[in-house]
Length: 191
Image 1 (cartoon, rainbow, N blue to C red):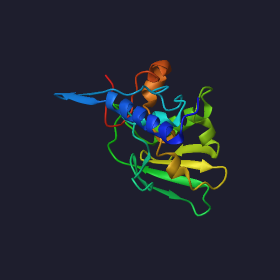
Image 2 (spheres, rainbow, N blue to C red):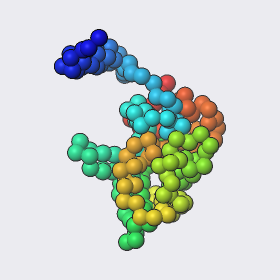
Image 3 (cartoon, rainbow, N blue to C red):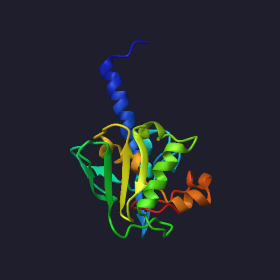
Image 4 (tube, one colour):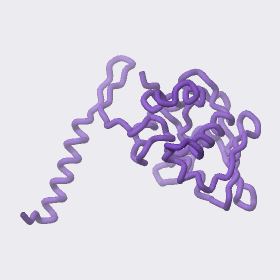
């Protein structure tokens, strides 16, 4: 059966509008109810698709974020700077950050996330971190990525799930649980 292209477009658009309408939101007091597909994993390290950031960003904040024009903006990091050779980038974290489990989001937490992302056997961010040779905590609010070669895309990269930092305490307590119950520093806490 041959279907004209304009009908396929209409059918696809209608289906998307129907899906959007079915995913409606409602509020009751302080509770927000929102219907949306679940991510492949609530742990940014084991999340399998880039589209998961649409959901996991409810529970996690990333080091940076992109504005409407696609420009990198501060988020967990208030600023970042490269060394002149482009092989080192230091992120300056905002003061007073906490995860929803009450633990401090500091340079050690960010370093632990990147180390886990690089070394965990089932990591889906490992490939995005190939240029990161090592990570150091340079004080409580400064984390440095030492790169194997200059990579000026890092601030863009960490605006998504590759920079969505989970609580290392939650990961150490129960890594399997973290994939189902996120512990981040995003705008919402999953209960």
